[in-house]
Length: 199
Figure 1 (cartoon, helix red, strand yellow):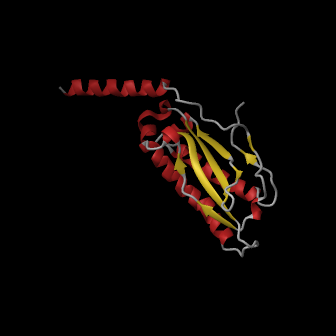
Figure 2: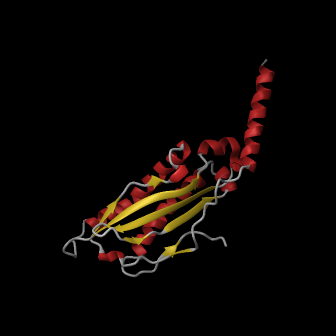
Figure 3: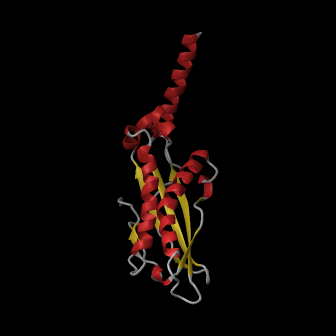
């Protein structure tokens, strides 16, 4: 009886590994190009920043593993962008009326491999990928000042060797890239890399 149970478990595990190994993504996860355009005006023209909570879009919302990744991204985003926003908002306003820039982070596309999947399937679970966008909006006029996007991935083998740490690190990197864009475009409109290195 026990031998039969173990055989059944082995078949299920083998079937799962094969499915993960040969599964293809529903759609391609990549940004529009290698470089984000510059904002339509310098971000230093705003006195205050209003930070909206990060969201998942489309079919990616509502899936448990994606919601877990969203929560992790939000924590890292708050630690980086949130802390920077608090510093900026503590400074005296330079304009009358005060100008506010609304920052709306969102995860447009994601394939996130959990730590549990890495333990069971390792590299067979595939690579993690994420595409994050920031929508920067002038609160007074509703004009979109910029909408940069940031891509990062964690290769299958790296995820396996680190038991999922590499998968989580890609979420940290996208949060850091978001902050880098905001800082770099304060006093000069230079855009920023998207993180895409492909063709």
